Amino acid sequence: MVINGLSYLIVNTANNSPGFGGDGGIAALATLNLGNDSGLALDSRGTLYVADQVNNRVRKIVPKTGVANPSDAYKAGIITTVAGSLNLPRCVAVDAPGTIYIAATETHRVLEVPAA
Image (cartoon, rainbow, N blue to C red):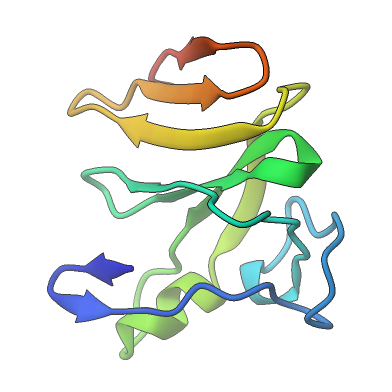
């Protein structure tokens, strides 16, 4: 993934095993189950949205401010679930006002989550 011209590698965190956990906590300690082609999106404030495909939800990582290294800002950021009870969300996008669009492949639908 590239953010502001810098490249970052998104990996399954914690124990490097797929799973689910860590909502409300530090992103680097959370577990996800991304599947083979989970989508990512970045909004204008730098919040990262991840299609946690196998866990049937979209998670968001709000970067920690005041961190010298940009990649550490995401590791130290807080992760939460933005939309759950989906059916294999594959793609996620965010428009300028902050509305989130999620494509759920199994239901052939796009879910719209209004900006908070």
